[in-house]
Length: 247
Image (spheres, rainbow, N blue to C red):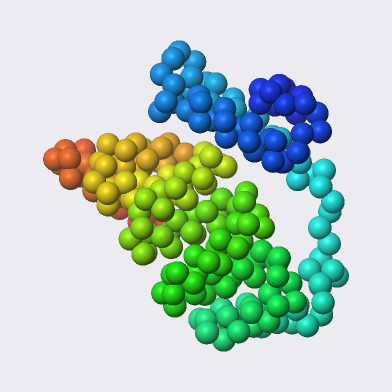
């Protein structure tokens, strides 16, 4: 599928903005998702829509202005602050890292990586509410980041706000339905909420995308055990252990 075909699939014209591409994809993905559309060809249609979105998103990025090196376009002291923060994070000195990240953000309030690093440091300190604020700032700047939606979901899960976590994972899945990690995260949330059928579907989706995903095999085994399917469960646990031993 080329760019012109992708535009046709999403019902867009040449020169469409990223917001237009994203909105068209979301509307069509929600409409034709196999969980909602049970007509013949719905799954094939959904896959085509996902492929079209990925092609157009990649094309948009390629056509965007080339990003210069960090230290070529940002104030020298901001570069130094950020580098010191990275060094502190590597040493697990999260409080000190946050101080340097705050200095970085004072100079560069829209530097998304600094917001993400700060959120990660706060999360490591179990300051989840503060971390959520930082992930939110990062998503305001770059709402297309699957990683940040996932990290936000994990943070909500730590606070036992599982419905909020599910919404984060669903956003990530809309952006990239081929991300096995997101499906695994969502499966864990569904399991905790007692939705075993949906949880199983999520782990199976993760495994179909990454057959060597040991943790998803293990999680699938737990769901099956909870369902009383002991033989199938044991097979999943064995598969998970074999994969871990082969690493």
